[in-house]
Image 1 (cartoon, rainbow, N blue to C red):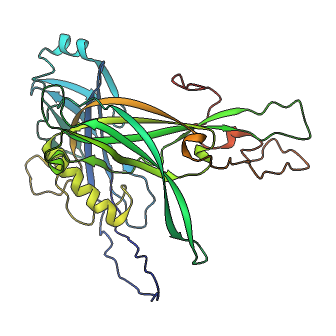
Image 2: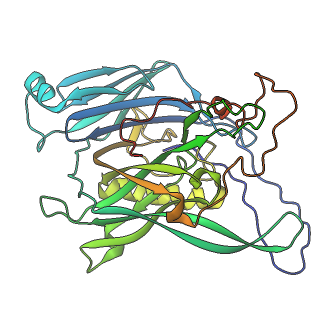
Image 3: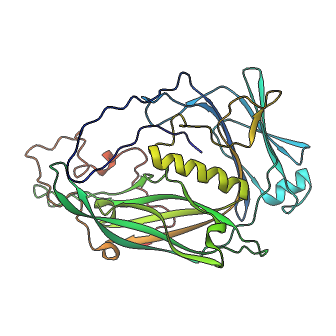
Length: 360
């Protein structure tokens, strides 16, 4: 869950008239209480945060609010959290310490903010189906460029292939979280034949705001789904050497899929998950003593399965490298922001260390 803007745009073919629309700005910020419990093969992963939405003119981020957040297990045991930080507890250690089993575990979120208490409903983790595989394809679409001409633009689409039935025979709605890391090699320097271009590994999280869900009820009569597009990006330099996708597949309860369906509908109208909602979206969190108080956010429990896919240039029709047309400057400035001179200038998170899962 992250918050939504109200501004949308219309793309019209043919005659274009300029119109002015008065958009309703939020009169005040709104509180967002959110949390997740995830369980992979080894750990429970707890996370919670209280924040404020932004005004319409705000940037795509959020404003954290001082809070005391905790997870209550089976209405009895309390796990204290640092807001915005993950807490991992091995599954065996968790149940040895607090008792119970994975099958009967229930959790709810409690957040204390400025003297008020916010409580979620109890949630349980639904086992997640193990995905079969990931694949990529290239789709070419016509688009208008800056000069108003129609051009063909290639997109790389990441697709999931997965059953909808989990290990205990339940039809399960799904959600996908997609991140990636791409390989970037500096340009060759004609002036220094002995210089060895550095190889950098750059995280790219341009898909983090995407709401990727599959409602099992929409696939009546099917036990699996194939080639469902869960992310796409222009086929640019990020795919010109090697890129690795990491996909976390999550199970969703019926209440959670209904929540994310509403978020997705609002997101498609507006496009940013960090701003004020254009209308009230359902939540399983209420202010204690005032159930009518407006609270944005959701407390979600998901079992998760992680998979990765290596994509090479030949898999996506050999897009050009970033430094393909690069010309070496006469004077090399060590502080130049040009990544073709120093790939460590690519941006936050860039590293010379190859990820542990990377295959050459």
